[in-house]
Length: 240
Image 1 (tube, helix red, strand yellow):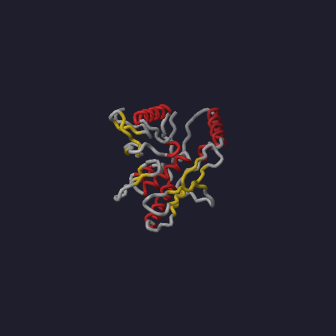
Image 2 (image 1 turned 45 degrees about the vertical axis):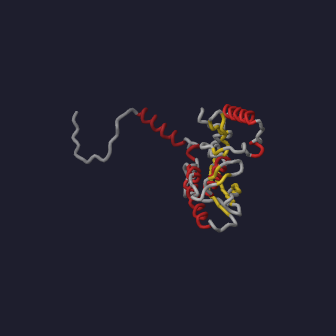
Image 3 (image 1 turned 90 degrees about the vertical axis):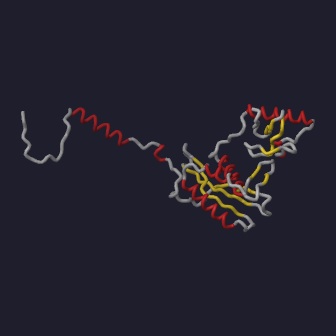
């Protein structure tokens, strides 16, 4: 049967059974009553997140042969989603203080830029490699334990790395049990060949006298064994 439409169409409805309509209405009502998931309430770090009245943090002393006075690097953290399964500690700001005013301008600029990157959110671990890749044209220096630092900026990056590892933002990529065993064996072989007993690295942070700089871990711990340089800190060896 044909029906003639002589008015403007302002709406339509797909035909269906009354039971189907009632079921659809019930599903909609049930969905509206479901509480939001816990994941939907996760607070992420971003630049609009307001600074709390109090932050927790850590201070690291940086003493270099380049200056008579030490630097004190303070990194404050913000705790997101406190008391929940999604609790996360993230760096929020950094301060660097020293009695030495020679580097005052660039240190203030560096702290403001790093703090801005922290508050931006996302992955901020790239800062470590960026800072540690800065080289002083006058030359670097060795820290206690034989680790080479190419510049004062790299030392600040090293302090930030230590802090990120402490709060779990960076995972510890230390030696596994097999690598530790290999390094211990290499150290014992070197001592036996040299006829001396070197000082335990765990106690003083020192390696055999005359050790060379390792190209992998940047520590003065590479010694020649079987005609090949072998690192007693990380196990790196060109001989395999």
